[in-house]
Length: 96
Image (cartoon, rainbow, N blue to C red; front, top):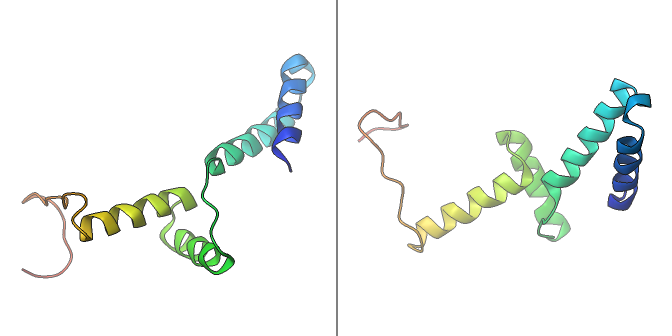
């Protein structure tokens, strides 16, 4: 569904909120949330989009959260950002 279609549906629902069923409102709010979650995204080539989709599904993060994670990791690894320090009480994998 296009963004303008969703906007029109939401505006119409706001005008006649008393007549809308709970299920219809739920559907429209979920569509709006999905559009907001995916707005402002970066477009990648098909193979990268597929890899991002697979990875985000595997890890349980949204596409945008996955992009943020990957960029942060790359920036830390290449010393553009400081590496997160681990406290004594933090759980870690591996051995020292």
